[in-house]
Length: 407
Ligand SMILES: NC(=O)NCCC[C@H](N)C(=O)O
Image 1 (cartoon, rainbow, N blue to C red):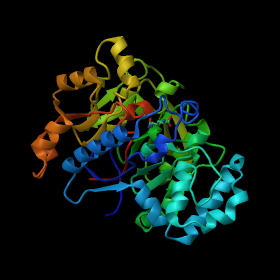
Image 2: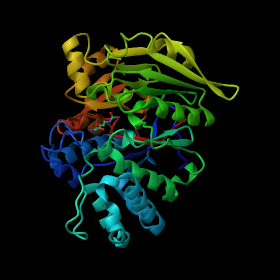
Image 3: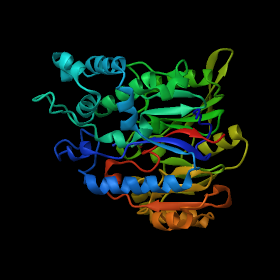
Image 4: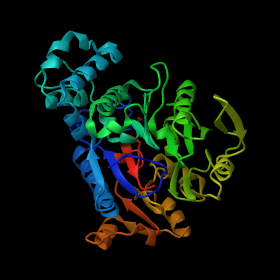
């Protein structure tokens, strides 16, 4: 399968995910803030919730659809000695405070599985006495890399807690044969800059949104924009959003549900004015044009109307409560076929008002498994339980890295 993403909502064909493992059980209450979790989470339930989400994907995706576990891809990539050595050298360079150079030779001797365990969990019995913090955020694969058209943008995280995940991802894109098509089409930013995948939304093959958030620096945004404009994107919409933990990425307050519908957090999107700068290329230089609102910018550049469905509904308290628990972070399996956490009941009610049939995970699976699901006949908002997962502060879109969607 060749990989391409030209929309946020076209039918999902291939996606990279990570079902949480032992790394989340290694987070203790003292560490949770530094590791970007709002609470400690219970691995068994988190795994079940994640697996249930993947069952929905499996039923909704075409028969030849692919769901890749990122740890399988890392392991396959680590079969190559050069990949292991590259990853180890990158970690030594990027994580100076860990003093990994003192165990470089031990790391180079590790078999793939033990090396991956060391990187993800921060420890392996093969190197006794040396520990680092775990990387519990790996379940949010969205933030690690973004496929835009036929190219890939590698994230460079703002937070140390996510550095190892991004080093693993860069190694994977560089060495794994599955990602061969991206060689020469990989957009990277420099080590003084940051950009995280949750800030990048592919509105169309020509229009990409990038959040100016607490995680994406101005220069990171500009470097990514230059790279994207060279890869066929015509407009990058820079969206200024509150620099806050609760809205750490653009996709925590705004996601696409169908070709012409989005779920948006009203205070930071629908009611914000003059927070958009459209960046285009003109005679080889990037030019900027300020635009009055995200809705106006999208409608002008994509060429049709958009409806912004309110996360949390009309009431302010519900809007804030449900944005906090990722009500605005829906993931689209096909145009008008979306998934999100069940607890965001007001958001689901709002979707229903816009013509979405509401189904929970069990109802959806029962109705469509063993059938060849045709998304074009439906408009469905599917809910799944995410009480453990959402304590990591991310929702369905955050937990997915789509690499192929229908054109
Ligand atoms: N795209 C997203 O919003 N991803 C969620 C990331 C949550 C993770 N705990 C973090 O703070 O980086």
